[in-house]
Image 1 (cartoon, rainbow, N blue to C red):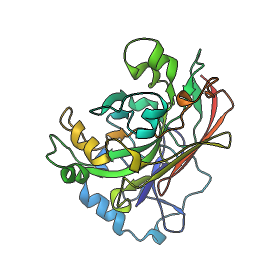
Image 2: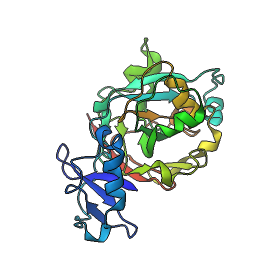
Image 3: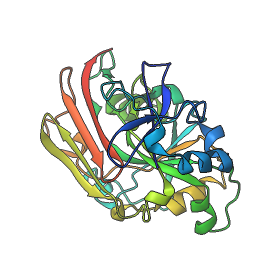
Image 4: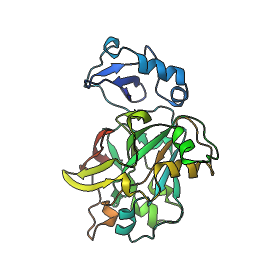
Length: 283
């Protein structure tokens, strides 16, 4: 299934994208798309078994919001692609590099992204997001870890590199600015993604292709990331994991690096998971 939420910010309604590309209203079946729904096998089965043609069609012009409400936490993995580590001159990590993003950084896939005040190094990162669907603690195997995954989505891990790297402390200062995590358009259930390690990712800035990678190049694959994290924190339904970005970010380019500016347009896609488009504005 391709689940999404449409409508004004803060008042989105649950929906489903049918096989013909029509957005269908799910509000008569479920109250929202959130961790509670993902943990409820019976509710998900009712949605999957619904006669989609009988569900009300929604206006295609409605804003698409984040596909997941009430996100618990966003756990991010840094330097998780071989080519990205190489372009930034970083050593391949022996264990996953972990940092956090606040859930309030999440916006819809086509919402405006705000360049922070004083920023000169706002950067782009297309990422595969993993959405957790059942509580997971101390997973003993990759199979157990993947069984806890409800689905996948496109994430844009927007980053401010000066705040992240040059201002001291942890990476979080460059990762948690408002609007810095567009998510969606869809939450694609895990049954529709047979191999999360075979997903092409691409990102364009003002029409120029900047990132063109594949999850095949991940240093730590999805199953290992989920297993590993479960030994340091409990993962709950509605948690999100951003799994890293391939080569092609501004930070990895020669000077003068083409960091994002107000008025720029960023588009990004992961095959089978949908497409995002954001225009940048001033915070």
